[in-house]
Image 1: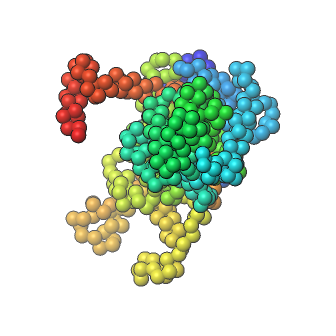
Image 2 (image 1 turned 45 degrees about the vertical axis):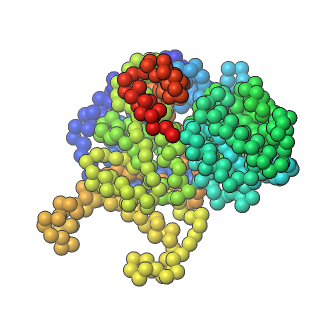
Image 3 (image 1 turned 90 degrees about the horizontal axis):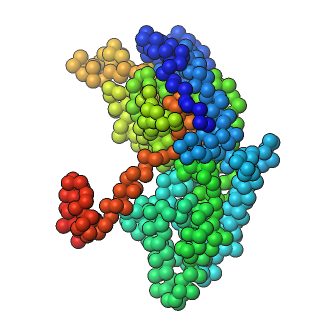
Amino acid sequence: MTTPPVDATTTPAWDDLRRHLTDFRGDLRGWFAADPDRAERLSHSAGDLFVDLSKNLVVDDTLELLVRLAHEVHLPERIEAMFTGEHVNVTEDRAVLHTALRRAPGTEPGLVVDGQDVDADVARELDKVCDFAEQVRSGTWSGITGKPVTTVVNIGIGGSDLGPVMVYEALEPYGSSDLEARFVSNIDPTDVAQKLAGLDPETTLFIVASKTFGTLETLTNARLARAWLWEQLIASGAIEDDDDAKQAAVRAHFVAVSTALDKVEAFGIDPANAFGFWDWVGGRYSVDSAIGTSLAVTFGPDVFRELLAGFRTVDEHFRSTPLERNVPALMGLLNVWYVNFLDAHTHAVLPYAQQLHRFPAYLQQLTMESNGKSVRWDGSEVTTQTGEVFWGEPGTNGQHAFYQLIHQGTRTIPADFIAFATPAYPLTDGQGDGKAVAPGADVHELFLANFFAQTQALAFGKTADEVRAEGTAEDLVSARTFSGNRPTTSIMAPALTPSVLGQLVALYEHITFVQGVVWGIDSFDQWGVELGKKLALEVAPAVAGDDAALEGQDPSTRSLIRYYRAQRR
């Protein structure tokens, strides 16, 4: 799509939102008191997700104007363009088809893009991944000595790591005691050293995930893993110290997720054991592609396909539901409201589920790599603020860390609270504490009491009169007063199943897309990460001792490298 983006700031809806803001005053207490149906009216469902938007700083007029804005920037048309394979990634002239990775088999009409039968290609690669997973799980695939695989080590970075590790942690209860996964991403040698510690090389399978098979961090770690495998197998007498034995070991213990088959083969991996994906799948949108091979192996193909079905549920909701009830659209538009009209700079994601402890980190790449842009898709400068800093920790850990800032700080920090009705591990406290926790208390209920209480406190606060009524000394009243009107969205589901996790991830993928459309930016390129990587290659010789290269650096960098070289032992 080469047509220029609509400048949202020139639309009638944007002007009306500005006027609306002039007299706008957040008053969640008053709004709820005057409108007993507010919670019901502003709660929506998308698949298994129940999403309560009622504690956001909006009234009906706000939402109506935001939906108008979405129509005026042609959001519905952009949604359809993405799903049908138009080249909405303009700067790379590519379609954006992560949604095609989870289309239902046999969907009509079929999806053909740029002469490629996308449905057939996706089905073929998914079947290949699932067949391989079954081989590993059944013991048909074994290491060089014939022992079955017990540990899968995924080597990747960015989307080739954040997605798989997040899902692995989230779905841990669905795993098998016979298989574990570890994830290596950082080029800091500590990462690979710690992840390989204690592993049996005869039962370890490495998955090297790099589309181009040229990512510096991933290939460096892959070579370190290969050297470790050879060293350990030779030391134990499992293989001879010769090239043929080494190559046979690599073919038995390494597979790849890549389309660069020549580089895969040069590394020593059998190209038949390479699983591919396409240039229309961005790294941060790729966990449901072959990048998820480690997940298909550790959890099994059925769980992986259930994850894909969850993605598909929200895809269908996003594509077909009118914007007034479209959960990803409404949440994306609310984020625009906060960023561009209420001057919010950050966004907290607070899962009340320990299994989602890596979810905020996953969203950091998804949202900030997508929408951290200062030019629009036609190359012109943006006309608004774009992007948000996403951050968070699981509750109740965050309550004892940074909630103070959210409750009583000077900044507006929209926050998404996520919780599940049924826990993975239902436990009771048999003894209690004799105070707040009764003997036999359901610990998950105690946990969720915090989830409900935090959004209530953020919304409604505590007035000075309420503080005084508790007998608080006057000189402490102001310190113990809570202003309220701190916006939150509550997202709940029956349980954290593979399907629900897929729904949750797809929800945020589409939220991100909505914001990008309003801001007129290409949410699917990431040129901003390239310069630092290029300069690192130019700086590396200076770090390694090349004095001529050192003299070519700026004074600050030169000084820092000199310090490093003097201190390195």
